[in-house]
Amino acid sequence: MARATGAVKRKPEKRDDRQLSLVPVSSPKKSAKPRPEGRSGKPAKATRPGGKKRRRATAESLATKQRDISVAEFFTKNRHLLGFDNPTKALLTTTKEAVDNALDACEDAGILPDVHVTITQLNGGERFRVTVKDNGPGIVKAQIPKIFGKLLYGSRFHTLRQARGQQGIGISAAGMYGQLTTGVPIRIVSRTKRSTPANLYTLRIDTQKNRPEILEESQVDVEDWDHGTEVGIELEAVYRKGPHSVDSYVEQTAVANPHATIRYESPDGEVMIYDSTTTDLPPEPREMKPHPYGVELGLLLRIFQASRGLTLKGALQNNFSRVSARVADDICKQANVRGSLRATRLAGDDVEAVYRAIQSVKIMAPPSSSVVPIGEDLIIAGLKRRYNAAFYFSCTRRPSVYRGNPFVIEAGVALGGDLSADGPAQVMRFANRVPLQYQKGGCGITAAVTETSWKNYGIHQPRGSLPIGPMAIFVHMASAWVPFTSESKEAIAHYPEIISEIKHALQSCGRQMGRHLRAVKREGEEARKRQYIEKYLPHIGIALKDMLGLTDRQRDAINGKLERLFEKKAR
Image (cartoon, rainbow, N blue to C red; front, side, top):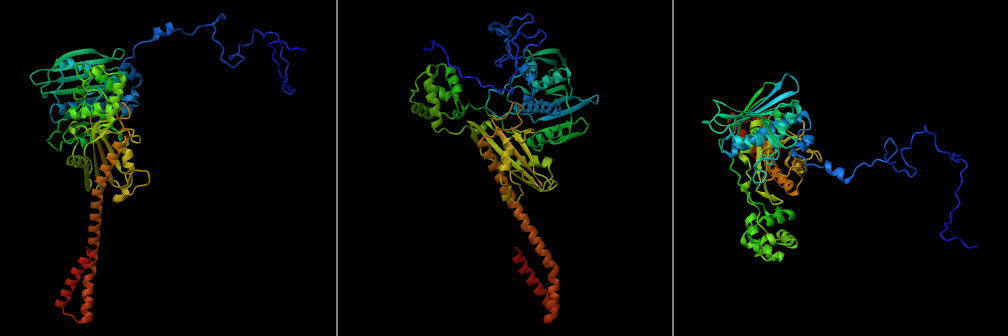
């Protein structure tokens, strides 16, 4: 018999009497609750109470919800990115941002910094007022609201030279945190010269529009203050002592900035004064142009598009450091692109060819004048401000480069003295003279210290750990652009070039330390042998006198010869 067209042959279903149950075909009772899922296991469609399907959204309704996000509003919700993720850290971050600004301002103006830091606990609770006053050049009246009341507003982001602050976020973010936790606005007093009164501003940040909202604007007389700026921020925080405290931060800042005088008054009322150990300001870092090795393809395309009126060769020479006419010709030749072409008219393929040619052409390292290290002598002077050690060693490496950015690594070691010999060595990490106190385990400096073989220099070190002994290790990275792992600037990224330079600097300190330790050991052995000589030589003389019948004069002569002989052997 012919099979009907389109019929499907079905296999007989297997029957399991143990799981067989009779299900009535009739509709379910009205009291039965609707099943959350359909028979296929998919989520049931949303319905209105009347049983009609509800459409959740349309392209038009979604479009009405789109709006700009203010950077201040973003960081309000993500303040942990800036170092305000807990009350203890918030107090440290607020102090750090204000002090960094004060030191930068003084150095830019060629003034030896004199910074006063006062932290006052209000009503004995978890509310503090941080006040930082400096003797810098002051701030022009029109710029005060923007600097303290607007995030991402500053003068250093677009300049390639060493500076503590770079992003224009820090102090305004600190004021925003204080405003969020206490509702109290930030207070600023600034004076540019003695002949004019100081300007007083009280302001808060409009987080939705990222702009300052001025609450008070006036002029005040300050008799004992020629010029400078005072910032006051009230915030909820917790004050604790220890390695991550404000006390430790101020102390380490004094170590890395021996030219600065810092007066610190803690919430406990304790006053600590760190007088400067030098009257010489650090040399002024010079701004540099980007180095070709550190430029990515998209940025290169944007630079060429902005180079109006310039040829390709001229754009390379005008926009980058270390690109001479000969180097520009080599790049154009390697890319097979005519140097006389207008930079704005280059096609995408031509720009990519130029980018690849840059990587293959040998270009001199960027100038190191944009980076100012502390110096070996001042590192030792700084270590002496904090530690009463027996020996001090330091090393400043020659400038090196990562991603086209120049940097200098410095290291120092304090050994012996009052330092504890029981635990691991203390490690102080610095970037552009600023202490790094958090994210120790994720920092490239810690990795380099751990990877250095300290056993070669006579220091005990468990495998994969810090060395153990009475020592403190100082590491400083000075760079036109420090590669921090986050916006809070707490740790340095693990660039191989940076870690290698840190290890070389530490090894140099280790070799100095090893020579001193060996010399001390030799001196100890010589002293111990001389003690034995002085103790037993008279008895030898007496024995020889009795055995050989020597006179006292002959005995003394033999003792002198034996003493000279033993001392010669002991060396």
